[in-house]
Length: 541
Image (cartoon, rainbow, N blue to C red; front, side, top):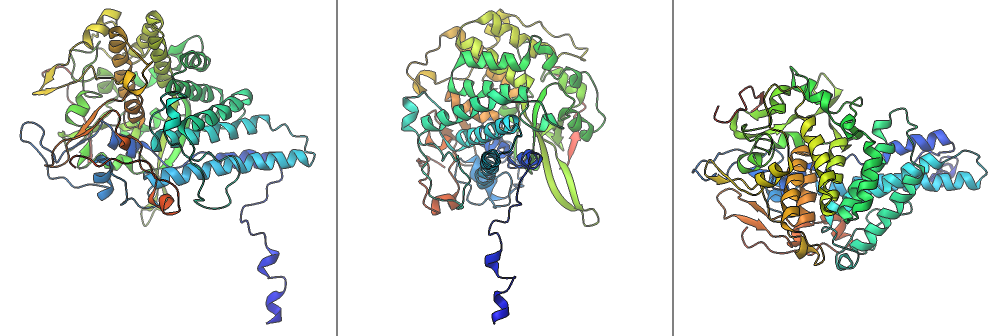
């Protein structure tokens, strides 16, 4: 019919459904979508030593018959297997981490292209700040992809032997195109190039700066990037720029000084934009919080080595008294099932309150003063500048003592070394205060002495506590080749050695099916409602 070729002809329409962007304000608004809404915490925490299987035998012939909350994918991830059971709409799945990161990267690339076009058309707007944010977002999303789906960075020579992920620098026109993955060295070089371009123009000029790469957040990102790259001078440089001359002012001291009557109040206080500790907050669609209420949990040795264990200045307590002050430990019906820290809680967005349906959000403290401080402390340790490392570790330690009436020891250098020199037995199970670090195995010229070993175990312990349930422990495990042991059900114990290729989470099957080379694989040898904890944290009570 001739009329079918009139003004309604589809050829008259722009085949690209994206809105046409023609102004500075529109480009700036677009950048709000350059932050991924996927959450890597579930995959990384379940892969790490922060989670145990409650259905495995605990050493005293005790086990529980608990069901999984997210289905078979929990069993797969805990066993370091490809997460083939994960749904595409699951914001915690590897496919979501991959696709939403590249979607955010595509937004950044689209913004950069638009700015180039507007300038070519004679626009007089100054795009420096927006362009800087686009570079930082592109760098950070690739950085997440690198640390989830690749092996740990070794050095510029050795990492040429490890596969990277595609670095997208132009708007992608084809979904899952067969892009070259390149090497990990090339990937880190491109991340660094974008990072430096972003740092050159970064600004605090946002209506909600904590939800964008403001200056503190950008410097904190640089500190973490250079820590993973083992460029310690730059770690110190950028961490200092983020923290300023008074690091204590960037700690969460006010939070630890108060009591909160409800879980929601505790959660809101932790992820509040007014907290000086929160440099960058990102929102994700995640139900990871619910995965900590069932078969898998931070329990037994995992809890005793992190949030429910002793530390150098709180050796007379089963957990740090700061948690008792804020009532921050929540249990699943009984302490036996494990516990979780409330900053992983949910913000629920109702789309229909009557039907009770909507979206589950997490507000993640992506970069914080505490984690940045511990990045710098680690760098100082690697440079053997122990007085400066001690000063940073002391700031972290003192910041958590605010508000507690318990008498805690004062952190000293000798206390650090004596505490991490022993591995005590608690309830018949060894609690590893000192964990073997495979530095020279990862890179032959990365040699540490005994003092560095003890101090590194201290900073890694503090980092493990600080970042619990955020996924960063998995990245630390990869960086140092820390061995992880998982017992699943009644199966034999599984061991993830320092060089096991499964430390690189397998890329999504949809991407592999489209023609992209998968990660190298190895076959394993074997394969209630929350309630507030109100008890005492003193040893023996």
